[in-house]
Structure formats: C-alpha cells, structure tokens
Amino acid sequence: MNINIRPEIERLKETIIQTRRDIHRHPELGFNEYRTASLISDRLTELGLEVNTAVGKTGVTGLLKGNEDGPTIALRADMDALPIQETGDVPYKSVNDGIMHACGHDGHVAMLLGAAEVLSKNSQFNGNVKFIFQPAEEGEGGARFMIDDGVLIDVDEIYGIHLWNYQKFGSIGIKAGPILASADIFDLTISGTGGHGATPHGTHDPIVAAAQLITAFQTIVSRNTNPLESTVVSIGTINGGYNFNIISDIVKMTGTTRAYTEENRNMIKVRMAEIIAGIEKMFSVKIHLNYEDGYPPTINDSTLADHVIKSASKIAPDGVESPYMTMGGEDFSYYGDHVPACFFFIGSAPDNRQPMSIPHHCSHFDIDEKALLVGSSVFIQLIEDRLSMTSD
Image (cartoon, rainbow, N blue to C red):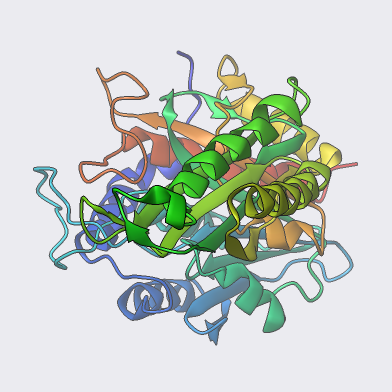
C-alpha cells in the first residue's frame, strides 16, 4: 500500500516509537496520569509552546501561536490506561500491576507529541494550533472537565485520532455523521416475595421476572429500532438467589445501552420504562431502574470530515475508507457539543495478524507501531492544509 509518511516524521520515527513504549511501560488510570502529564508538559515546554497543566485535573495543553487573525484548531489525544493486567510478552510490558494501555492511548500521545515537534518549527500559520492531552477518557469523561476548565475557549474546530486494530495498517477510517455510539449505563433492582422452591405459588419470583425482562429488552432492538439503524441493549451482570431450593426476594442487574442518534437513545429509555411497568404488573414485583446518561454519540461535522479526507488522502492515497464501525463510545463527543468536531481512525492491526485478532481492551493488546507515523503525518498535513498562509 502506498503510504506517504511525512519526511519530518520519518526522521522522528525512533523518538515517536520510544515515547509510545515509555508511556506503555508506565500506564496510569484516569485522573492519575501524573507521570504522563509531566512527560508531555516537559516536551511541550522544550518546543517553546505556551503550556498549561492541571487542565481538567491532570490534562495538559500546548498552544502554538501563528497569525492571531486566523482560526484556532485543536488536536486532541487521550492519556489514560485501563485496569487490566497485561499478559502480552513485549519488552515494553507494563510495570504497573493491574494497569495497562489496552486501547492505544499511549500511541495517541506519542503521535500528537510527534506532530507538535514538527509543527512547532513553523509558526507561519494563518491561525493557531492547540494541542490537547486529555485525561480519563475511559469512562470518567475527562473531556467534560477540560471543557469546564476552558480548553475550548477561542477554539474554532477540533480533531481527534484513534488507533484502530479493527483496520489494517495503511487504512484511515473517516466519515461524516455518527461514527461512535452513545454509551449509557443502568442498574435495576427487582423486588419480589421469596419462599420455598417447592411452593412457588406463594411467592412473587424476581428471577422469573428478570428472565422475562431481559428477553423483553431485546425487543427494543429487534422490534422498535429501524433495521437500517443500530442500537444495543446489553445486560452485563445479574445477581440474585440464596440456594438451589429458595426463591429469592431480590435480583439485581446492570447493563449498557448504545445508539448512534439521540432519537434512538431517548426511545430506548422510554421503551425500557414501559417494559418495566408491564413486567411489574405481570409478576407482581417492584422494579427500580437507575439509568445514567453516559457519553453522547460522536458525530462528525461534514465540513471537517471533508478536510480530513483531503489531507489523509495525501498521506494514504489508497487507504482512506469508511471506518470499521462499532457501538463503542468516546467522550470526544462532548467537544462536538461546543465546536465543530471530527474523529477518525488510523488502522493499526499488527503485521501478519487479522484485524479482529488483537481487539481493543484485551490483555494482550498491541499495535503496528508504523501506524504512529501515519497518525502524526495526518495531523501535520491537516494543519498545513487548514492553516497554510497560502491557502484559500
């Protein structure tokens, strides 16, 4: 496949890879990325950027100033790792017990630092570049904390990259519109009347009610959602019961829902409430639902998506394609609620491995490190195309 790695990035290849490996070896959970943030702030300071630390608790930003009359474009990388024990056998294996970079955020930081080093050598831009290194993407919504701390003040548009092991090296996944789903969570408690397993007629069995509830929830996807759209309702845990011959009083369940649109997201909530009301009547139980909105859908601005396609095509002329879609969620979506935003994927499946064989969030996660050079190159090309002093 024809890949046009930027020559400046090719010269920084070892630095970018070693940065990724150093961060991989020393992973940190959300809002505890102190070592990572220190590494980033030191690098950005060395590059002569205007650096702010403790943004959104542990986040770091660097501002490259060009022509103040032009727009300010933000580039974002997330920094946090996951609570997973690494099982892969690599020389840069995590030294922090029970924590590893299993989603590629170490690579995101390395790519953006590489791009920052190259771009910092050229201040002749028709605008400014803000480099955003964000904490706590994995479930805690670090983007919201950075936004609350003013990270988007004066920002006109923002772009984010994600390494993507579901696509081969050399591919760049990008499309306008929904690209990742909302990610809501819920827990519910079914309260019935327990008793002896041999005399069920004297009970109101919450386990039977739970079985019916789980099945009924699946009709939200199969019978209430347009087949051409996608939603998910998944039960992740179910707990209840005391012994083989005892009918329980209580069953507790937790789960998640996913949707690409706010309309379907709201429809799921409405239908869950309606189904719960029906199950309560059918089985004479009480059901308490605690539903928590998580990340909203990540929706790419169409104009910004066109910018990415144009720039990415210069780096990977044959590799720009529709992304491998999942129902995963991303707190990058919060940025898009405030300014035009675009999120895209860099194929990173390791050499000689099928794209699905090393999935994200697995204990043996790793990437094709050549993908780091692609990501950095796209970032640089995008900024040059958008902020060139000679551009339209």
